[in-house]
Image (tube, rainbow, N blue to C red):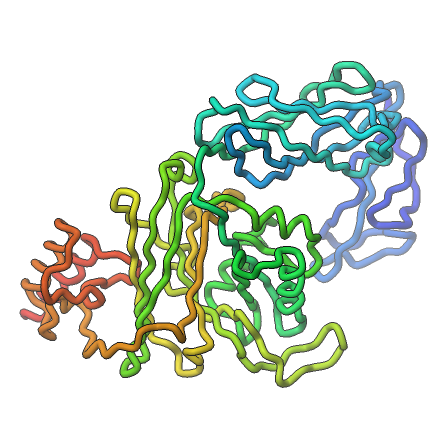
Length: 477
């Protein structure tokens, strides 16, 4: 087979010119870093400060291009499929054939080798664009009732093309990872993260968009995550870095430009565990004491397997200048709402310690002098643990929030780390108290949980005893 490469000038960075009907676009255009490159007839500095486009096209002489060839190049679904019910699953198709098949093609959905549904375009639709643009095919296959609860792969295949079974089967199928369940605990409350800097009004616009598309604000929590500016915090920077490094989003990053379907798809998911948040506030120490508790159902272990609990603090009515990108002016008195202030738990959450199907985790945090307590909110959510590698697999399981102004006001007295029995000393009695609590799960009379919890990971375990032993040994010297 001979090949012939011809020179041409590209006019549009993402719209390469096709020489002839039989040419195959290998790549529309890509970003390349380098010294100098000729683009649109001019030499351009292609160093780190510039990006230039390179059109790449391979002209194949004597090769065989199929008349019709649809390939599945991606998929999107809401992950959760209930037995005996359908759930939306969209696949993306691209035409690699010489001619467009129009509406004359069929998709088949398989689960464990059995056909569970079909998709066919409505008669008269435009079908797949011949120039190679992506077309989405949306269907809702029904999951058989005897499908085991848990994760499994559904397969989608182009089963008919112009009335015939396709010859190019390798590119005509795609596995779709789904979670099958039998029973849920109601609708999941969703997080809508909005990332912005002091040069845009993304959060306010996103909140309006969410209210338009979702309606009931009780179904979602908005978090305003600033990055690379004076309002950023460690958690917002960490979440941003994960997004930048991988190209995938965090829990549910949605902004003002996303369409309504995206909002609705990601805020109507089932939950398999609940979250209840309460807190107390000690004015003397400006310290917030947070308790998170809840339950899970029998499907949780098979569907979600494990979860971390993340606890964050946000604040409303924070006055700080911002550039109004809608009007092109600075607003010195702009009110920032739902501003992420800090993480109370570990940034990516702490492993939940289950007692059967129940859990309870507690945290304490001293509020910054610049924060207004009555404008703050506690955000608690479950998500799949982040390992540093499973970027695309982190999904929200459920979440809830609590207004700090509704906290019980208490006087805790002096807080002494390790003083589990409350006598303001750290010794072997404190070790016995903590060990008794771990062994029985019950708090001994006079037990000070907040002093005994040494790691602020929401729970008391052997790691806390080790720290108290070290403190006791040091105080005895």
